[in-house]
Image (cartoon, rainbow, N blue to C red; front, side, top):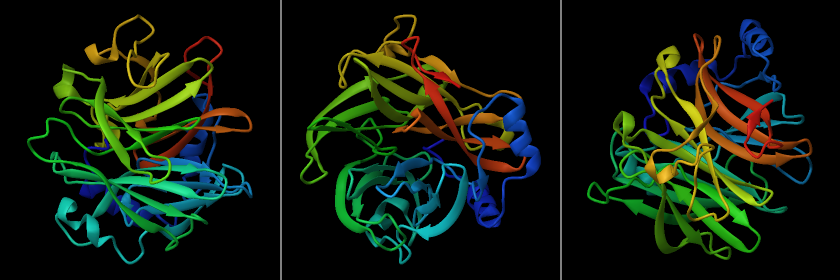
Length: 322
């Protein structure tokens, strides 16, 4: 989950950085009906995807310095390096170590600039912060630190991790949160990329110790869809992570699931869960590409954590993985 970045994952990721996804795993993806076959270096956690003006795809993901991968076609992926190859000392007070792992980045490309939000914390703590950076190329070492966006303490009652930017015309919003009192949303200034205040709760669970995180809001038609990850992440094939959704006509309130249950009351319609040899999908992001809405996430197999990419069909009014 985005709340926890285990040592097991970090060690596995270092070992797999230069390896391709095994043929058995690619075959499993095809056998279970997943349309988004990926190859190359895909050992990621909490991926977010952007596409620049030249058509190159970028995936940023959790790791020391934030990892960067690129692809010319959304299929074959190459590891490129780190957002912060020289470390990010301004995050050390939240990670508790020098050059600690930075979590759950979220990218937005506006046609000329990459906007990147990311979080710093330690497992099980709400002493956390979200930071903001920009780059004209998205390549390793090219980002400029734009500073602290928001932070929480152990007495805040919510957790400032797992940022996700919604750009809705001239209005920007940042959703975030993990466990505690759930998912929050706050307005953002497009000129600075920083929050302007007014935190609102938009989703919360009491079941399973309040296990909800990794928010991502996507507008399709007249609805705003709030995706979240539920339950237990980061436990390999024992992970029970799953992707849920609700929708609203407002980005900042009123989300309900397909049964009409409010997301603030524990509602959430299942989008994707464990199936076949694929375990614990979550840590999701959603982007629009030439072939429509794209769901980006990580999942587990017996070999580790990998990148998942699928199209979403909203024709029923609710997102369906295709």
